[in-house]
Image (cartoon, rainbow over all chains, first blue to last red; front, side, top):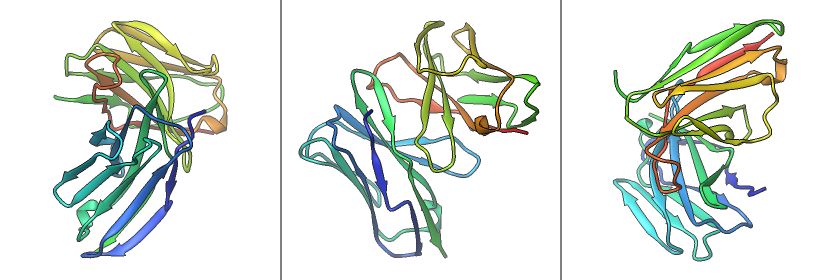
Length: 110
Length: 114
């Protein structure tokens, strides 16, 4: 089993604060994806990282894939209430198989 | 209508009922998926269809029966479910069954088994 652990499980912060959430595993992944899921909706893909050490930016969101391709982090700068949601990471291993983490539930208070 | 749609959005059923979940994608994709999302657990892949053929079945109990009549529609037939089957059931589609293809998810069906 390709276990992905996400931390923290829950995070409640004030608007304007910065935060980082983590996705860790002992397994190596050929790629890793981050999704955001809002209440009553399905997950929406934010980014895919494929190269060890890769950093991708999406406006205020910065994604990093670990050098060994076993872990990843998502950093949000100046969080806004619209960032509220469940953040899921998913690692690809064993050709086309994706393994999801349990997610980090983020609440950004105005 | 665009994207991936699922009906019904909410379903309450008894353990002896038979019901079906429907998924429809308007994206021209060739691969479709059923996932189960339970509270505090990782998203679990249940079934994968590629070009209307089932290519993956991840040890799912036989009380869940998928059907893919064409590349745009996917069903999940349910019967004699257990309370622990209560969860959000998500459908997704992608262009092909490749790891690099983006999966587009529907809004899910919230299932409660009494």
